[in-house]
Length: 490
Image (cartoon, rainbow, N blue to C red; front, side):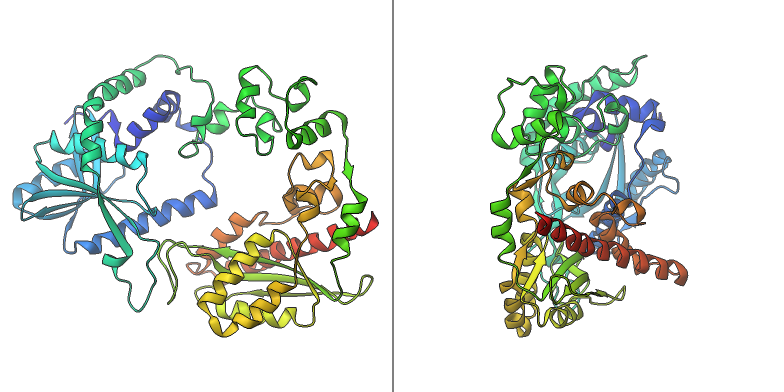
Protein backbone atom coordinates (compact mmCIF):
# COMPACT_ATOMS: atom_id res chain seq x y z
CA UNK A 1 0.00 0.00 0.00
CA UNK A 2 1.38 3.41 -1.01
CA UNK A 3 1.80 5.92 1.78
CA UNK A 4 -1.03 8.43 2.02
CA UNK A 5 -0.53 11.99 0.77
CA UNK A 6 -3.26 13.61 2.84
CA UNK A 7 -4.82 12.80 6.19
CA UNK A 8 -8.05 14.08 7.61
CA UNK A 9 -6.20 16.70 9.66
CA UNK A 10 -3.94 17.85 6.83
CA UNK A 11 -6.94 18.10 4.50
CA UNK A 12 -8.64 20.43 6.97
CA UNK A 13 -5.37 22.35 7.36
CA UNK A 14 -5.05 22.72 3.59
CA UNK A 15 -8.59 23.96 3.13
CA UNK A 16 -7.81 26.64 5.70
CA UNK A 17 -4.42 27.61 4.19
CA UNK A 18 -2.27 26.14 1.41
CA UNK A 19 0.86 27.58 2.96
CA UNK A 20 0.22 25.90 6.30
CA UNK A 21 -0.36 22.58 4.50
CA UNK A 22 2.94 22.87 2.62
CA UNK A 23 4.94 23.90 5.69
CA UNK A 24 3.43 21.08 7.72
CA UNK A 25 4.71 18.61 5.13
CA UNK A 26 8.09 20.10 4.25
CA UNK A 27 9.09 22.49 7.07
CA UNK A 28 7.83 21.11 10.37
CA UNK A 29 10.81 22.81 12.01
CA UNK A 30 9.05 26.17 11.56
CA UNK A 31 6.13 25.20 13.78
CA UNK A 32 5.44 27.22 16.91
CA UNK A 33 6.21 25.57 20.22
CA UNK A 34 3.16 23.98 21.81
CA UNK A 35 2.11 25.87 24.95
CA UNK A 36 1.12 24.18 28.21
CA UNK A 37 -2.46 25.33 27.61
CA UNK A 38 -2.57 23.90 24.10
CA UNK A 39 -1.07 20.62 25.26
CA UNK A 40 -3.75 20.43 27.96
CA UNK A 41 -6.41 20.86 25.26
CA UNK A 42 -4.89 18.06 23.17
CA UNK A 43 -4.72 15.75 26.17
CA UNK A 44 -8.29 16.56 27.10
CA UNK A 45 -9.45 15.72 23.58
CA UNK A 46 -7.69 12.35 23.75
CA UNK A 47 -9.29 11.57 27.11
CA UNK A 48 -12.76 12.47 25.87
CA UNK A 49 -12.27 10.25 22.82
CA UNK A 50 -11.31 7.31 25.03
CA UNK A 51 -14.32 7.93 27.28
CA UNK A 52 -16.67 7.88 24.29
CA UNK A 53 -15.65 4.30 23.52
CA UNK A 54 -17.83 3.36 26.50
CA UNK A 55 -20.86 4.30 24.38
CA UNK A 56 -20.07 1.15 22.41
CA UNK A 57 -18.03 -1.11 24.71
CA UNK A 58 -16.15 -4.23 23.72
CA UNK A 59 -14.71 -3.04 20.46
CA UNK A 60 -11.34 -3.71 18.87
CA UNK A 61 -8.77 -0.90 18.88
CA UNK A 62 -6.95 -0.38 15.57
CA UNK A 63 -4.67 2.38 16.80
CA UNK A 64 -1.25 1.83 15.19
CA UNK A 65 1.70 0.90 17.38
CA UNK A 66 3.63 3.80 15.89
CA UNK A 67 2.09 7.19 15.20
CA UNK A 68 3.35 7.07 11.61
CA UNK A 69 2.35 3.46 10.89
CA UNK A 70 -1.16 4.14 9.65
CA UNK A 71 -0.85 1.70 6.76
CA UNK A 72 -0.82 -1.07 9.38
CA UNK A 73 -3.94 0.45 10.95
CA UNK A 74 -5.71 0.42 7.56
CA UNK A 75 -4.81 -3.24 7.09
CA UNK A 76 -5.91 -4.17 10.60
CA UNK A 77 -9.22 -2.37 10.13
CA UNK A 78 -9.83 -4.29 6.91
CA UNK A 79 -9.05 -7.58 8.63
CA UNK A 80 -11.40 -6.84 11.54
CA UNK A 81 -14.25 -6.00 9.16
CA UNK A 82 -13.69 -9.25 7.27
CA UNK A 83 -13.67 -11.17 10.58
CA UNK A 84 -17.10 -9.77 11.41
CA UNK A 85 -16.02 -7.40 14.20
CA UNK A 86 -18.93 -5.05 14.85
CA UNK A 87 -17.26 -2.32 16.91
CA UNK A 88 -13.93 -0.81 15.87
CA UNK A 89 -12.08 2.06 17.55
CA UNK A 90 -9.74 4.22 15.47
CA UNK A 91 -10.83 2.49 12.28
CA UNK A 92 -8.51 3.59 9.47
CA UNK A 93 -9.27 3.85 5.76
CA UNK A 94 -7.29 5.04 2.77
CA UNK A 95 -8.57 6.01 -0.65
CA UNK A 96 -6.99 8.06 -3.42
CA UNK A 97 -4.06 8.93 -1.18
CA UNK A 98 -6.34 10.20 1.59
CA UNK A 99 -6.12 8.61 5.04
CA UNK A 100 -9.02 8.92 7.48
CA UNK A 101 -9.03 7.50 10.99
CA UNK A 102 -12.47 7.35 12.59
CA UNK A 103 -13.02 7.33 16.33
CA UNK A 104 -15.75 4.66 16.38
CA UNK A 105 -17.19 2.45 13.63
CA UNK A 106 -20.21 0.34 14.61
CA UNK A 107 -22.21 -2.23 12.68
CA UNK A 108 -25.84 -1.86 13.75
CA UNK A 109 -28.70 -4.06 12.57
CA UNK A 110 -29.22 -1.83 9.52
CA UNK A 111 -25.53 -1.51 8.63
CA UNK A 112 -22.40 0.48 9.44
CA UNK A 113 -22.53 3.82 11.25
CA UNK A 114 -19.61 6.15 11.87
CA UNK A 115 -19.05 8.25 14.98
CA UNK A 116 -16.47 11.02 15.29
CA UNK A 117 -15.92 12.28 18.84
CA UNK A 118 -15.24 15.94 19.68
CA UNK A 119 -14.50 17.45 23.07
CA UNK A 120 -16.53 20.54 22.18
CA UNK A 121 -20.15 21.22 23.14
CA UNK A 122 -21.57 21.49 19.64
CA UNK A 123 -21.14 20.86 15.91
CA UNK A 124 -19.14 23.35 13.84
CA UNK A 125 -18.69 23.77 10.08
CA UNK A 126 -15.15 22.46 10.46
CA UNK A 127 -16.47 19.29 12.09
CA UNK A 128 -18.91 18.81 9.20
CA UNK A 129 -16.08 19.10 6.68
CA UNK A 130 -14.01 16.77 8.87
CA UNK A 131 -16.82 14.20 8.72
CA UNK A 132 -17.11 14.64 4.96
CA UNK A 133 -13.50 13.68 4.24
CA UNK A 134 -13.99 10.65 6.50
CA UNK A 135 -17.16 9.67 4.66
CA UNK A 136 -15.27 10.07 1.36
CA UNK A 137 -12.46 7.72 2.40
CA UNK A 138 -14.68 5.17 4.17
CA UNK A 139 -17.40 4.78 1.52
CA UNK A 140 -14.86 4.64 -1.30
CA UNK A 141 -13.15 1.82 0.60
CA UNK A 142 -16.25 -0.29 0.15
CA UNK A 143 -18.13 0.43 3.39
CA UNK A 144 -21.76 1.37 2.92
CA UNK A 145 -22.29 3.91 5.71
CA UNK A 146 -25.89 4.26 6.80
CA UNK A 147 -25.05 7.34 8.85
CA UNK A 148 -22.19 9.46 10.14
CA UNK A 149 -22.48 11.44 13.36
CA UNK A 150 -20.60 13.87 15.55
CA UNK A 151 -20.48 12.86 19.20
CA UNK A 152 -19.99 15.92 21.38
CA UNK A 153 -20.33 16.87 25.04
CA UNK A 154 -23.72 17.92 26.38
CA UNK A 155 -22.90 20.91 28.57
CA UNK A 156 -26.24 20.69 30.39
CA UNK A 157 -25.19 17.39 31.96
CA UNK A 158 -24.72 17.47 35.75
CA UNK A 159 -22.67 14.76 37.44
CA UNK A 160 -24.91 12.88 39.87
CA UNK A 161 -23.39 9.60 41.00
CA UNK A 162 -21.37 7.65 38.45
CA UNK A 163 -20.70 9.35 35.12
CA UNK A 164 -23.37 8.30 32.59
CA UNK A 165 -21.72 8.48 29.18
CA UNK A 166 -25.07 8.23 27.42
CA UNK A 167 -26.19 11.42 29.15
CA UNK A 168 -22.79 13.11 29.04
CA UNK A 169 -22.50 12.79 25.25
CA UNK A 170 -24.89 14.01 22.56
CA UNK A 171 -24.91 12.34 19.14
CA UNK A 172 -25.84 14.42 16.10
CA UNK A 173 -26.16 12.99 12.60
CA UNK A 174 -24.36 15.13 10.00
CA UNK A 175 -24.95 12.87 6.99
CA UNK A 176 -27.28 15.32 5.27
CA UNK A 177 -24.66 18.07 5.39
CA UNK A 178 -21.90 15.61 4.46
CA UNK A 179 -23.76 14.63 1.29
CA UNK A 180 -24.03 18.32 0.37
CA UNK A 181 -20.27 18.82 0.77
CA UNK A 182 -19.19 15.50 -0.74
CA UNK A 183 -19.27 16.46 -4.48
CA UNK A 184 -16.58 19.08 -3.89
CA UNK A 185 -14.14 16.74 -2.16
CA UNK A 186 -12.41 15.14 -5.22
CA UNK A 187 -11.41 18.51 -6.66
CA UNK A 188 -10.27 19.76 -3.24
CA UNK A 189 -8.17 16.63 -2.74
CA UNK A 190 -6.58 17.04 -6.16
CA UNK A 191 -5.80 20.71 -5.51
CA UNK A 192 -4.20 19.99 -2.14
CA UNK A 193 -2.06 17.16 -3.57
CA UNK A 194 -0.83 19.61 -6.19
CA UNK A 195 0.14 22.08 -3.45
CA UNK A 196 2.21 19.42 -1.69
CA UNK A 197 4.15 18.70 -4.90
CA UNK A 198 5.16 22.33 -5.45
CA UNK A 199 8.86 23.21 -5.39
CA UNK A 200 8.27 26.48 -3.54
CA UNK A 201 6.28 27.51 -0.50
CA UNK A 202 2.87 28.82 -1.65
CA UNK A 203 2.53 32.57 -1.40
CA UNK A 204 -0.35 33.13 0.99
CA UNK A 205 -0.68 36.49 2.71
CA UNK A 206 -1.61 36.54 6.38
CA UNK A 207 -5.27 37.21 7.04
CA UNK A 208 -8.20 36.53 9.35
CA UNK A 209 -7.93 32.85 8.38
CA UNK A 210 -4.76 32.66 10.50
CA UNK A 211 -6.91 32.65 13.63
CA UNK A 212 -10.23 31.36 12.38
CA UNK A 213 -11.74 28.97 13.16
CA UNK A 214 -8.62 28.22 15.23
CA UNK A 215 -5.07 29.51 15.53
CA UNK A 216 -2.34 28.26 13.20
CA UNK A 217 0.83 26.68 14.57
CA UNK A 218 2.93 28.39 11.88
CA UNK A 219 1.84 31.89 12.90
CA UNK A 220 5.22 32.67 14.42
CA UNK A 221 6.85 32.10 11.02
CA UNK A 222 4.24 33.76 8.82
CA UNK A 223 3.81 36.80 11.06
CA UNK A 224 7.50 37.48 11.66
CA UNK A 225 7.35 40.63 9.52
CA UNK A 226 4.73 42.11 11.88
CA UNK A 227 6.26 44.25 14.67
CA UNK A 228 5.83 43.14 18.27
CA UNK A 229 3.41 46.03 18.70
CA UNK A 230 1.38 46.74 15.57
CA UNK A 231 -2.02 47.66 14.18
CA UNK A 232 -3.13 44.18 15.26
CA UNK A 233 -2.84 45.39 18.86
CA UNK A 234 -5.54 47.99 18.37
CA UNK A 235 -8.17 47.08 20.93
CA UNK A 236 -11.66 46.31 19.65
CA UNK A 237 -10.33 46.84 16.11
CA UNK A 238 -13.45 45.42 14.44
CA UNK A 239 -11.66 45.08 11.10
CA UNK A 240 -9.66 48.31 11.35
CA UNK A 241 -6.45 46.29 11.78
CA UNK A 242 -6.87 44.40 8.50
CA UNK A 243 -8.06 47.55 6.74
CA UNK A 244 -4.81 49.26 7.72
CA UNK A 245 -2.65 46.23 6.95
CA UNK A 246 -4.01 46.02 3.41
CA UNK A 247 -2.87 49.61 2.93
CA UNK A 248 0.65 48.68 4.00
CA UNK A 249 0.38 50.19 7.47
CA UNK A 250 1.85 47.99 10.20
CA UNK A 251 2.70 50.41 13.00
CA UNK A 252 0.06 52.49 14.77
CA UNK A 253 2.45 55.45 14.60
CA UNK A 254 2.28 55.30 10.79
CA UNK A 255 -1.50 55.80 10.67
CA UNK A 256 -2.17 59.16 8.95
CA UNK A 257 -3.38 61.93 11.25
CA UNK A 258 -6.51 62.43 9.16
CA UNK A 259 -7.46 58.73 9.17
CA UNK A 260 -11.06 58.30 10.31
CA UNK A 261 -11.07 56.68 13.77
CA UNK A 262 -13.66 56.22 16.48
CA UNK A 263 -13.03 57.78 19.89
CA UNK A 264 -11.63 54.60 21.49
CA UNK A 265 -9.22 53.96 18.64
CA UNK A 266 -8.16 57.61 18.54
CA UNK A 267 -7.19 57.56 22.22
CA UNK A 268 -4.89 54.60 21.73
CA UNK A 269 -3.35 55.74 18.46
CA UNK A 270 -2.84 59.36 19.54
CA UNK A 271 -1.23 58.03 22.70
CA UNK A 272 1.13 55.88 20.64
CA UNK A 273 2.07 58.84 18.43
CA UNK A 274 2.30 61.63 20.97
CA UNK A 275 2.62 59.94 24.36
CA UNK A 276 -0.57 61.69 25.45
CA UNK A 277 -2.27 60.59 28.63
CA UNK A 278 -5.71 61.06 30.17
CA UNK A 279 -6.18 61.66 33.87
CA UNK A 280 -9.75 62.64 34.65
CA UNK A 281 -9.40 63.76 38.26
CA UNK A 282 -13.10 64.37 38.77
CA UNK A 283 -14.04 60.87 37.61
CA UNK A 284 -11.22 59.27 39.60
CA UNK A 285 -12.21 61.11 42.77
CA UNK A 286 -15.81 60.02 42.22
CA UNK A 287 -14.60 56.43 41.95
CA UNK A 288 -12.45 56.69 45.08
CA UNK A 289 -15.35 58.15 47.08
CA UNK A 290 -17.08 54.78 46.83
CA UNK A 291 -14.24 53.02 48.67
CA UNK A 292 -14.75 52.60 52.39
CA UNK A 293 -12.22 51.05 54.75
CA UNK A 294 -11.48 48.35 55.76
CA UNK A 295 -10.94 47.04 52.22
CA UNK A 296 -10.08 43.61 50.85
CA UNK A 297 -8.43 43.27 47.43
CA UNK A 298 -9.37 39.82 46.15
CA UNK A 299 -8.62 37.75 43.07
CA UNK A 300 -9.73 34.25 42.02
CA UNK A 301 -8.16 31.54 39.91
CA UNK A 302 -10.22 28.89 38.17
CA UNK A 303 -9.81 25.87 35.94
CA UNK A 304 -12.21 23.76 33.95
CA UNK A 305 -12.34 20.21 32.64
CA UNK A 306 -14.40 18.63 29.90
CA UNK A 307 -15.40 15.76 32.18
CA UNK A 308 -16.81 16.94 35.53
CA UNK A 309 -14.68 15.65 38.39
CA UNK A 310 -17.00 16.20 41.35
CA UNK A 311 -20.67 15.75 42.16
CA UNK A 312 -22.97 18.56 41.06
CA UNK A 313 -20.53 19.85 38.43
CA UNK A 314 -21.09 20.32 34.70
CA UNK A 315 -18.70 19.94 31.75
CA UNK A 316 -16.44 22.96 31.35
CA UNK A 317 -17.69 24.51 34.56
CA UNK A 318 -15.40 27.10 36.09
CA UNK A 319 -13.90 25.53 39.21
CA UNK A 320 -12.63 28.04 41.75
CA UNK A 321 -9.49 26.62 43.31
CA UNK A 322 -7.54 29.60 44.63
CA UNK A 323 -7.93 33.10 45.99
CA UNK A 324 -5.63 35.82 47.25
CA UNK A 325 -6.58 38.77 49.45
CA UNK A 326 -4.69 41.84 50.61
CA UNK A 327 -6.60 43.40 53.48
CA UNK A 328 -6.14 46.95 54.75
CA UNK A 329 -8.04 48.47 57.67
CA UNK A 330 -7.20 52.10 56.84
CA UNK A 331 -5.74 54.05 53.94
CA UNK A 332 -2.27 54.19 55.45
CA UNK A 333 -2.65 51.12 57.65
CA UNK A 334 -0.89 47.78 57.64
CA UNK A 335 -1.62 45.47 54.74
CA UNK A 336 -2.26 41.83 55.61
CA UNK A 337 -2.11 39.08 53.01
CA UNK A 338 -4.31 35.96 53.16
CA UNK A 339 -4.64 33.17 50.63
CA UNK A 340 -6.17 29.81 49.81
CA UNK A 341 -5.02 27.13 47.38
CA UNK A 342 -6.99 23.89 47.18
CA UNK A 343 -5.34 20.55 47.67
CA UNK A 344 -4.84 19.04 44.23
CA UNK A 345 -7.18 16.15 43.48
CA UNK A 346 -9.84 17.26 45.98
CA UNK A 347 -13.12 19.12 45.53
CA UNK A 348 -11.91 22.73 45.83
CA UNK A 349 -14.96 24.92 45.83
CA UNK A 350 -16.70 24.61 49.18
CA UNK A 351 -13.51 25.22 51.13
CA UNK A 352 -12.73 28.04 48.69
CA UNK A 353 -16.03 29.64 49.67
CA UNK A 354 -15.71 29.08 53.41
CA UNK A 355 -12.23 30.57 53.58
CA UNK A 356 -13.03 33.48 51.25
CA UNK A 357 -16.14 34.48 53.22
CA UNK A 358 -14.11 34.41 56.43
CA UNK A 359 -11.32 36.50 54.91
CA UNK A 360 -13.78 39.15 53.73
CA UNK A 361 -15.49 39.56 57.11
CA UNK A 362 -15.24 43.11 58.39
CA UNK A 363 -14.43 44.59 54.98
CA UNK A 364 -16.65 47.48 53.91
CA UNK A 365 -15.26 47.45 50.38
CA UNK A 366 -14.17 44.39 48.42
CA UNK A 367 -12.03 45.42 45.46
CA UNK A 368 -11.82 43.16 42.44
CA UNK A 369 -10.39 43.65 38.97
CA UNK A 370 -13.15 42.76 36.52
CA UNK A 371 -16.15 42.11 38.75
CA UNK A 372 -17.96 40.38 35.90
CA UNK A 373 -15.66 37.40 36.32
CA UNK A 374 -15.45 37.20 40.12
CA UNK A 375 -19.12 38.10 40.47
CA UNK A 376 -20.12 35.45 37.95
CA UNK A 377 -18.16 32.79 39.80
CA UNK A 378 -19.70 33.71 43.14
CA UNK A 379 -23.22 33.71 41.72
CA UNK A 380 -22.62 30.24 40.30
CA UNK A 381 -21.30 29.05 43.66
CA UNK A 382 -24.42 30.45 45.37
CA UNK A 383 -26.51 28.21 43.11
CA UNK A 384 -24.37 25.17 43.75
CA UNK A 385 -24.00 25.77 47.51
CA UNK A 386 -27.24 27.52 48.52
CA UNK A 387 -26.41 27.37 52.25
CA UNK A 388 -23.78 30.05 51.61
CA UNK A 389 -26.04 32.20 49.42
CA UNK A 390 -26.62 34.94 52.01
CA UNK A 391 -22.91 35.21 52.81
CA UNK A 392 -22.10 35.36 49.10
CA UNK A 393 -24.73 38.09 48.61
CA UNK A 394 -23.06 40.07 51.40
CA UNK A 395 -19.68 39.78 49.68
CA UNK A 396 -21.13 40.79 46.32
CA UNK A 397 -22.86 43.83 47.81
CA UNK A 398 -19.44 45.25 48.74
CA UNK A 399 -17.85 44.76 45.34
CA UNK A 400 -16.10 47.72 43.69
CA UNK A 401 -14.38 47.12 40.36
CA UNK A 402 -10.87 48.61 40.30
CA UNK A 403 -10.82 48.08 36.55
CA UNK A 404 -13.47 50.75 36.06
CA UNK A 405 -11.35 53.94 35.86
CA UNK A 406 -8.97 52.24 33.43
CA UNK A 407 -11.72 50.68 31.34
CA UNK A 408 -13.50 54.03 31.08
CA UNK A 409 -10.21 55.71 30.06
CA UNK A 410 -10.41 58.04 33.06
CA UNK A 411 -6.81 57.05 33.69
CA UNK A 412 -4.95 56.25 30.52
CA UNK A 413 -1.26 56.24 29.67
CA UNK A 414 0.08 55.56 26.21
CA UNK A 415 2.13 52.66 27.58
CA UNK A 416 -1.15 50.82 28.30
CA UNK A 417 -1.47 50.45 24.52
CA UNK A 418 -5.22 50.66 24.47
CA UNK A 419 -5.71 47.95 27.07
CA UNK A 420 -7.21 48.02 30.54
CA UNK A 421 -5.98 44.52 31.41
CA UNK A 422 -4.10 44.52 34.69
CA UNK A 423 -1.16 42.95 32.82
CA UNK A 424 -0.90 46.18 30.77
CA UNK A 425 -1.99 48.70 33.39
CA UNK A 426 0.42 47.54 36.11
CA UNK A 427 3.73 48.07 34.21
CA UNK A 428 2.42 51.41 32.94
CA UNK A 429 1.67 52.76 36.43
CA UNK A 430 4.08 50.71 38.56
CA UNK A 431 7.04 49.74 36.35
CA UNK A 432 8.94 48.35 39.33
CA UNK A 433 6.46 45.46 39.51
CA UNK A 434 6.41 42.76 36.85
CA UNK A 435 4.84 39.37 36.30
CA UNK A 436 7.92 38.46 34.27
CA UNK A 437 9.80 37.61 37.47
CA UNK A 438 7.32 34.79 38.21
CA UNK A 439 7.39 31.19 37.03
CA UNK A 440 3.67 31.45 36.29
CA UNK A 441 2.87 34.72 34.55
CA UNK A 442 -0.76 34.55 33.44
CA UNK A 443 -4.07 32.95 34.35
CA UNK A 444 -4.26 30.39 31.54
CA UNK A 445 -1.01 28.80 32.63
CA UNK A 446 -2.14 28.84 36.27
CA UNK A 447 -5.34 27.00 35.32
CA UNK A 448 -3.60 24.36 33.21
CA UNK A 449 -0.89 23.91 35.85
CA UNK A 450 -3.30 23.30 38.71
CA UNK A 451 -5.53 20.99 36.66
CA UNK A 452 -2.50 18.82 35.83
CA UNK A 453 -1.02 18.89 39.34
CA UNK A 454 -3.09 15.95 40.61
CA UNK A 455 -1.16 13.69 38.22
CA UNK A 456 2.28 14.79 39.46
CA UNK A 457 4.06 12.13 41.54
CA UNK A 458 7.18 14.08 42.49
CA UNK A 459 6.54 15.73 45.88
CA UNK A 460 9.21 18.37 45.26
CA UNK A 461 7.59 19.35 41.96
CA UNK A 462 4.19 19.57 43.65
CA UNK A 463 5.60 21.78 46.41
CA UNK A 464 7.32 24.13 43.96
CA UNK A 465 4.27 24.31 41.71
CA UNK A 466 2.03 25.22 44.62
CA UNK A 467 4.53 27.89 45.63
CA UNK A 468 4.46 29.27 42.06
CA UNK A 469 0.65 29.30 42.00
CA UNK A 470 0.48 31.18 45.29
CA UNK A 471 3.06 33.71 44.10
CA UNK A 472 1.10 34.38 40.90
CA UNK A 473 -2.25 34.94 42.60
CA UNK A 474 -0.62 37.07 45.32
CA UNK A 475 0.88 39.28 42.61
CA UNK A 476 -2.60 39.93 41.21
CA UNK A 477 -3.91 41.37 44.48
CA UNK A 478 -0.66 43.16 45.35
CA UNK A 479 -0.89 44.79 41.93
CA UNK A 480 -4.34 46.02 42.89
CA UNK A 481 -2.95 47.51 46.10
CA UNK A 482 -0.33 49.45 44.15
CA UNK A 483 -2.78 50.59 41.47
CA UNK A 484 -5.12 51.96 44.12
CA UNK A 485 -2.21 53.87 45.61
CA UNK A 486 -1.56 55.42 42.20
CA UNK A 487 -5.20 56.48 41.92
CA UNK A 488 -5.00 58.15 45.32
CA UNK A 489 -1.95 60.11 44.16
CA UNK A 490 -4.17 61.84 41.59
